[in-house]
Image (cartoon, rainbow, N blue to C red; front, side, top):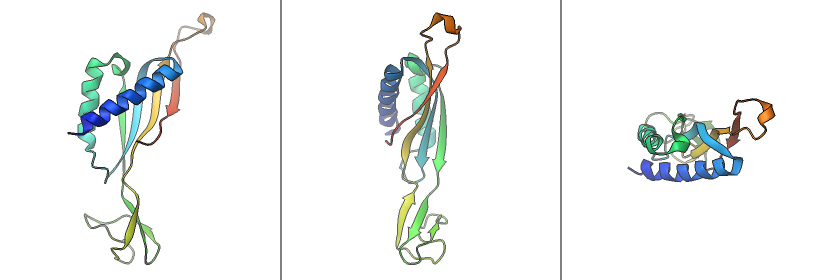
Length: 136
């Protein structure tokens, strides 16, 4: 189950982002997982829940998984289509000479963190800070 290793790497990124922004906790994490990425979204979610149990930074965090469908560009007719079923071929002309242009991603897309209020005169709330992560 390599999703645990992926979650370990994501935890390192989240810890680094939290340190960089002075955040005390992560509230929401959004990842994009392509259908051809060899990542099982349900297994990644289970790994995330396990990390939430032992990592204070993630204790109240929610995980949002966005599934990215496969899209191909045909080398013959140049059409961009989504393949049907398990055969990766052009949806327009049926050619198997295609390039995958979407669906292999694994991206840490959005992170919402809670930042401690540095100015006591600014209120008691801890505002959320959103940041985007880079490709994985």
